[in-house]
Length: 254
Image (cartoon, rainbow, N blue to C red):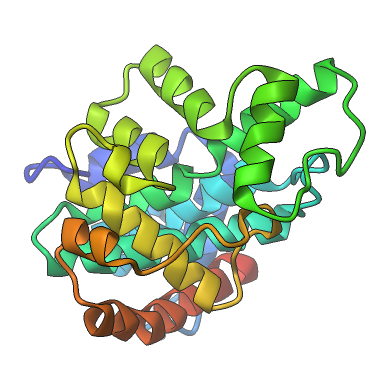
């Protein structure tokens, strides 16, 4: 999607590998949101109608819904809660990144992948025979302490290890590792701070995770690193609500 010379055929070749994604893209292209009166049956026409970047958003959201559908019983978080949290954070970070000259698609991807560490620890906790809700504690700091003491690592460290193993770029790895405390990022990356702000926006919209209570704040240090004022950050709340609700509506309908 970052290749300026990418063709619809290239995108079709990837989407077609997954029958569920193919069906969802086709249904979305024929929805009231995109329909122009004629019914589309071909994937290339569907992608052309929706637009490449919209397909990027929708396919990412669809993959996230499949990835997170099992939920996190160890934390007491349902699949729907996890998915809505990731979508809302993705939209918030995408909008701020675009407005501040950062890569919007990287921002969207960061938001979607942010909960992967907890998903990984859910599997580890099952191997340790941890009881459901044993990882649910009153604050994010206590949750992280439980993760480390019980499983030997935290969710953000788990993401870091997993992404390095997959060969992901530091632009995806570092912001997630340090986003709870952006000042700890050695590179002081703007995206790290923006991811923190995006999580604050998600929490403001009632889509925060119960295991991340008291984790997000628009402190002066975070805002300075993000290159935003508190008033500017607050303006993204309504935008995020509007776009994320639209995306979730399209994906649920498909």
